[in-house]
Every structure is written in structure tokens, then in C-alpha cells.
Length: 173
Image (cartoon, rainbow, N blue to C red; front, top):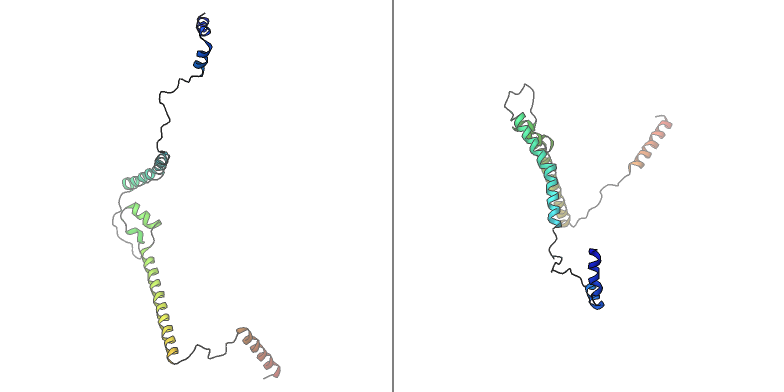
């Protein structure tokens, strides 16, 4: 009954006002989509930061805490006769010892590599100096670079040697 009484009032309205009421949208209220900068980069940064903290920082902190609490720092002891300690055994902390053993390189080996590099560079320097002196002498004497011997391929030398040996066996000398 209530529905019919409500509909009766609509039938009494003129048709033009009914059309206007039906086409009117009652949704303004100045609610518009706000224009603001994107927060996607900030959210992505927070996600990655949280991920890497969980992946790296927390396990590393737990491992270092375990090493320092349960293993503790190393103490000095007598070195057995005939034993030479490794370079990483001189560090006090177990974490530092681990890093020195598996990540860092042996300082003695690095030093020797550097000395070899210096030696090779010095040899190159000496060769360049000698070449410069040779070119200077060549320019001074109006000389030119040439071979003072006939270059011989080893293949032909072997063939000639084999032929000479064969001839020697034939002659019977």
C-alpha cells in the first residue's frame, strides 16, 4: 500500500517536470578526483628497503651477535714449532677473521703481485730507452734498420740437414 501511495503522487506530476527530475543527476557536491603526484616510487622504495633489511641486515646482525656472544674474541697462544700462521689468523674478532679469509686477499700475495708489476714496467721502460737510443744512433749515422743475416726458416734447415745425413750414409764415411 505504501508503494502505491508513493507512486500516485508521481502520476499527478506534470510530465515535463517528471522528465526533468528523471534526467537530473544529484551527484555533485564538488567531489572531484584529486590531482596529486604519484606515490609509486616511494612505495616501491619502502618495499625494496624492507625486503633488503629482512634479507641482509637482520641475518647479518644475528650472525655477528652469535659470533661475538658465543665464540668471543680470540686470545693469544703459543705458536707451535715449525708452524707459520696464516695471514687471517692474526685478527682478533671471528667476524674479521672470516672476512679476511674468504673475502680479502693475502697481503703478501698482493705485495708480490705489485712487485712483479713494477719489475715488468721497469723492463718495458728500459727497452723503450734502448729503442730510443738505437733510433737516435740510426738517425745520427744516417743508417736504417736492416737484417745482417739471411733469415732461414727452420723447415728448410731440417730438410737440408736430413739430406746431408742421407748423403753421408750413402758415402759410407
